[in-house]
Image 1 (cartoon, rainbow, N blue to C red):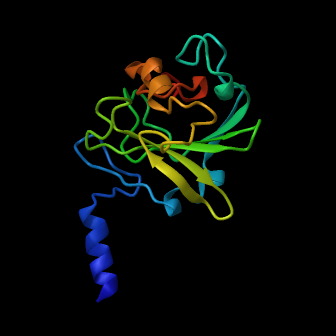
Image 2 (tube, one colour):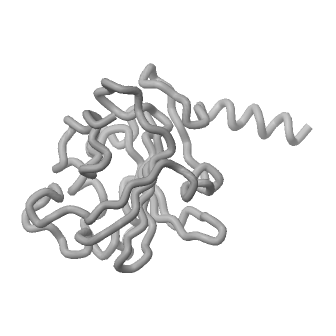
Length: 171
């Protein structure tokens, strides 16, 4: 009986399993959603420069090389990432792991619309924090301003994803 209740509760959350679309679905990411990220399509990035990180000057903590992983590439010609898309980046400088999940449901409507942000730990993959940005007293890779400031400044033309390797026009 408990298994049936768990399935019903998860279904009620609107989880699309990463295969949602922009038709009003919502996606709630769990630690298990991110667990296989090392096997996803990935790109090496030298990171943003001081002129293209979404802020001027760019906070030094967001500069530097990183590996970026995407749960599924968007269909060619997409103007936004599908609901359920998860992007993970592992920073070379300090090994910090940050992520975003396209949640949908008008989540974060005052910022990087429909995106939820995360810090992850590994072995096993666990969500350290989640939401619009880090909890009070914590930082986003050393930046006390959190996630929205940079991602909103990157603009909606690439669905608030700043990475040069993850431009929608390249898929």
